[in-house]
Image (cartoon, rainbow, N blue to C red; front, side, top):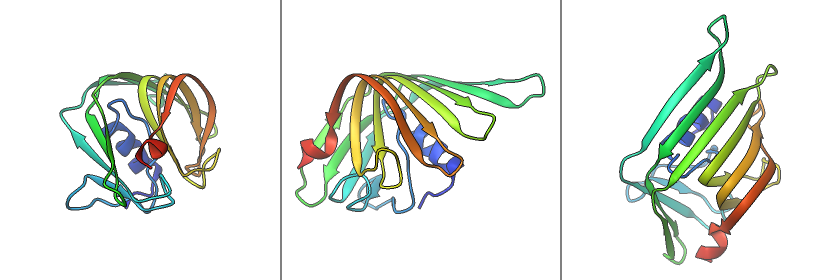
Length: 168
């Protein structure tokens, strides 16, 4: 199970195909799937996510005069993701596509994240707006990550696809 913000960040990088999402306690690694989110976490049903192919992204961290990270930039093509509704076995696959993620580390310890391209954002019941929701955005998304790990969606533009609805 992933709980800490650093593990959330690692999960974001790992899925950053075209993907940005929060990983919370309750997500589990299952033998037959890469990640499984229990019902009520990412969708109203148990949602499995499988990752295929190599993540071809470049990461760059920018620091201030004291060597403290102030911003990270991640760009490139990620992996293919396959989402499965474990109740019905309905699936939808997203090909590897390009995305850019710019994360600014704010003075209060929070982060402001701006993504462009193809990105998946999973919001949980503790986030704003409250989930569960799993959405593919093709365009621009801005959200903050509070010091408590709460994601707050600030703005979106472009197209979006409700993955939970597509699997229902």
